[in-house]
Length: 140
Image 1 (cartoon, rainbow, N blue to C red):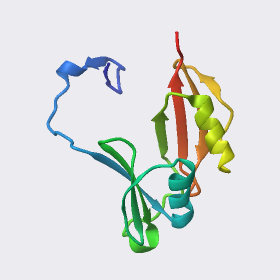
Image 2 (cartoon, one colour):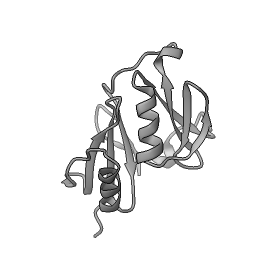
Image 3 (cartoon, rainbow, N blue to C red):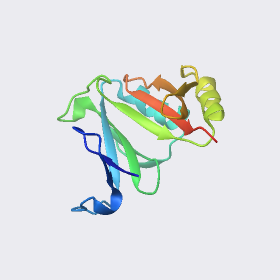
Image 4 (cartoon, rainbow, N blue to C red):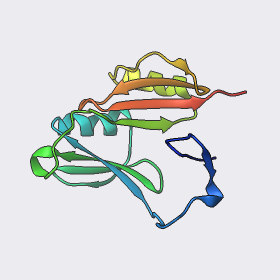
């Protein structure tokens, strides 16, 4: 696996990639107008564990080193993008079970379909409008 260089699509092997930083954790922060509904969605539908919570900011654990946070735009210096220009992707083991769980909690996942890059995938949007992509590689 490597990094595709945008202008030529040449793949650069990982061993040649520079590593100027050593990241301990990563956190994507979603600034939201519909803050409480978005927090409820990630906590109740996706069942993400809360790592930290205040009255305007909630940090969820995705993995040991990855987090997803939801911030109330009314208390932040950054305003909501209303979901524009952002897709959160989640590779999961059981696509059908995940689809059913999201459907059962009241979310509206799209149909599971085959993607051209060799995976099965479905999409849905959180209450703020952010697109979520759930995918599993095709088993050969």
